[in-house]
Length: 489
Ligand SMILES: Cc1ncc(COP(=O)(O)O)c(C=O)c1O
Image (cartoon, rainbow, N blue to C red):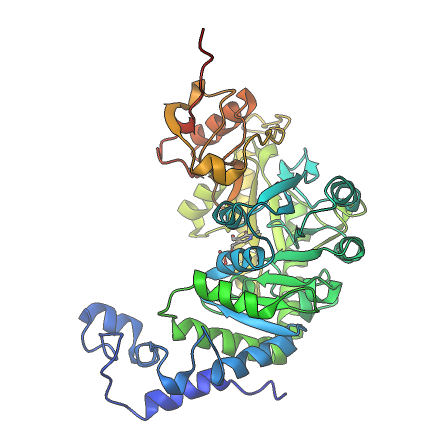
């Protein structure tokens, strides 16, 4: 196929150039019927392709023309048999891959540090999750990948499971031995689904971890918008082999997707695919070089640590993506959240994410030498102000153990509930999520038994100002739990 072509973008531009008289939505009609300030700001080019699934532009829900062709080109680029475009992020793609593989009552084997979209699919479909414990890094206070050994144990204990989901790489860029896991799971005749939200560049450079498609996985949900250069919310679901039913995937995708699909987002996927196909290797190469230089410089700054190859060599840290620059700041006596705020206030730098002990900075093809130098200079200044001045926060990081799941998440979510003070909820079964976003990994899931350890951990996060989310009570003072029926005497 000719990867220089952009069938969808080209069709959109041709349609806009022909200047048709529209009697269809969107009602702003090329911006005429909208707020003037927004119209001026966003510009006429963007508004001219803010279109809808009229005949010349195909339909994402049943593509046969330019969208189908754009998806075929993407499949070739991502080395998949088939690619589906998504306008509802990788969250939509993850929910589609799970719900097209598992039905009500089916089991799915998943790491506990899953994104909340995995749990949404599990709740909507009434699936039973079998959790794998990711390996915890007590020095960094983060979770890594799962081990092949834990997958093997889960497969032996649950030979009736339908699928195994793997995160490749984690938010922090660490990978398990995906190829080995895929071979193992396939030998049990199960499907491998991969959350590849942070892996859009993987297929394009040998120094990056193996991509899900190259490792032989059946499906992979990939955020092209996060690292591949398309617009926010645009993602792909890559599929290969004969274990999955592509017609079912199309149906589920359609059920979960708006009927008013954004052609701006779809066109950005088409264009990002062209750019990756032609320039992906060079784009990834530049990001890797800049990130490696940044890592080296940051590790020379007193009190800071940015992990690299030295953490590799265990089953759960089989490989890592060097473009994820995670900086451990706790030796400066500050939290990751303090560091995030300080960088914003003093250097106008926005990091990807912070937690108790770390800030995560993504070096992407969008970075320049200047942006990376600024980050390093800012971190050096932050160290000068804090290192050996503030008492180093040498707390041993305590991530609570994985809570016990005592109800199927859907039964808890839709069960009879009552609201109780969070601090007094130990021992109760929670009926809602509690997670820190970003990264959106749940600390408590519907159906799990709350422990005092969970309460302390969450309270500590709320107190330092980290974004704890999920409960209907946003202050996390109250929590919804399953009503307990007391014995009658
Ligand atoms: C590991 C992981 N999976 C899935 C997602 C969801 O991706 P999206 O924001 O494209 O819906 C995210 C988003 O941060 C993520 O970190």
